[in-house]
Image (cartoon, rainbow, N blue to C red; front, side):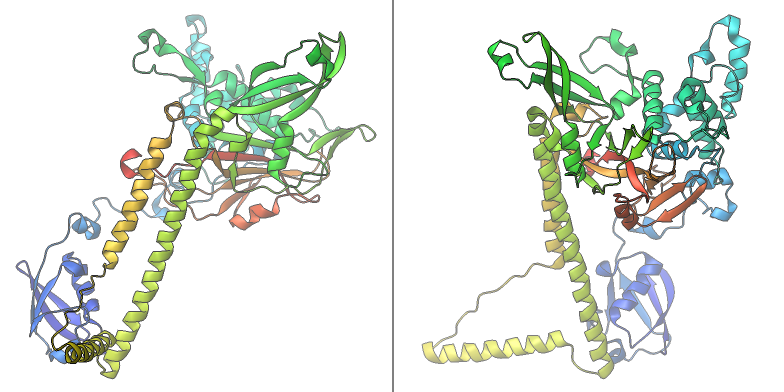
Length: 598
C-alpha cells in the first residue's frame, strides 16, 4: 500500500495526512475526523468536479504528493468532547493501593478464611454483601454504646475507636450489626482472604447455637447456612433502622419516625386465610380467619412431585395446621393459604432440603433436582389486588424488551449489509469496475426509458412515472427509537402511585437472580457451603453508575474466589451430593424508564 502525503486546510489550520488512493474515500474522511473532530457526514471536501463523496474513487483524482484539500464543516454538539484530551490523568491499576483497587471493582473481591467449619457463615456473609443498600446503611450505623451516657463516655470512646479500626468486636457489647459493618469495611479494602473472627465471636455470643462443639470434641460443629442467614437478618431487623421523612402534607412531628432496613428492602407481607377442612364447621357458623403476616423468605417445599421452583413455592404457600376448633370443641385440621400483598426489593427463597431423620438423629438432605430460573415472575403468588397493579407493568416491560431486541437485531443486520456493500465497493474499485449501485441505476433508467417508450407509442404521449421516496437508515432508526421511548413513557404511567412511593419494593413482579448459597454433601451437619454472586459492571468513579454486566459470576469458596460463567448457575439445581442451591437471593428488576425519568 503506497500512501500520498497531502495537506488538508480546515478552520485556518493545516493538517498533514497520508492518503491511500486505493482505499475508499470514506476512510479518508475518518482520518480527518480523528484530527478535526468533524464527523464524516458533516464534512465538505472540495475536489475537481465538486464535492468528495464516500464512494468517490480516489485513484481517479490524480492526486500528487503535497496536494491541498479544502475542507468545511463543524463538529456536532458534544462531538468535540469525545476526542478531547481527558481532564484527569488516567490511573492504572498498578499505581493504585490495594484498597483503591478493591473499591474500583477492577480486582477479585475479598474472600473469607475458614476458621474451622465456618463455611456456612462465609457463604452467608458473601451473599448478603451483594446487597449494596445494606452496605450503605451499615456504614451509617452507630450502636447505642457509641452515644452512651457520660459515665461510660471513656469506655464508649475506646470502643468507637476500635470500631473505626475494624475491631469493634473486641470486648464491650459484641454488637452483631456493628461487627458486620466493620467486617464489610475491611473486606472492601483488601483483595486477600480475610478472617471474620470478630464477627464470628459476636455471632456466637448473640446466638450460642453457633458455638456448639463437634461430636468429636475437636473444634466447632458444622452449622446450617439457612439458620445463620435467618439469625443475622433477624438481628439486623432489630438494630438497623432507617429514618423516614414525612410525605408532603404530613405532620412535621413524624420526621423522626424510623423503619427497619430489613422491613423496607428484604421483608414482604402475606394476606392469609385460615379455614377448617371439615364441612360441618361452616354449618355451625365458623368463619374463615383472615390475617396478615410478614415474611423474610419464601420457602420452596420439595416432594416427589416438585421439579421446579414455581411448584415448590406454591406448595409452601399452603400448609396444614391442627388446632382447636371453637365450633367442634375439639382439634381439627385447618388449611392456611397465603398470598403476597407486598413484595420487597430483595426476595430470599429457601429450598427446604433438610429434614430431621429420627432413625439417624440428624438433619438429612433431600437430593431431588429442582430447577430455578435467572428471572423469577412472582405475580401469580400475589393477592388479586396486587396482581392488578403488577401485571400491566410486567407485560409492558416484556413488550419493551421485545422491541429493544428487535431493534438490536435490525442494527446488527444493517451493519452486516453495510459491511458487505463496503467489501463489494472495495473489490470493484480494486478491479477498476463501475460501482454496482451505478450499474443498477443505469439499468433502472434504461428499463424506465423502454417502458416509457412503449407506453408512449401505445398512447401517443409521455407517461409520468410516480416518485417513490425511501426512508434513510437514520430515519428508520429514529422511528424505532421514538417507538421504544413512547413505550417507556407508557410504562411510567402504568406504575401505581402506591408502588412508585415504595422505593424498597418491587413494581413489576419480576426478579433477577443475584446470589446463590449452595451446599455439597448429604446432611446439614456435614458437607461444604459456598456462595455465587452475580458480577456487577465496573463503576464510574465520576458518576457512580455501573457499566453493563458481562453475565459472569463470582464463586466464593471460603478464601478462594474465582470468576465463573453464567452457565455454571444452571448446574446448581441439585440431584445428588454435588453443590445444590439452598438459598436464592433475587433483586427486583430495574424498570426500563425514559432517560428523564431515571
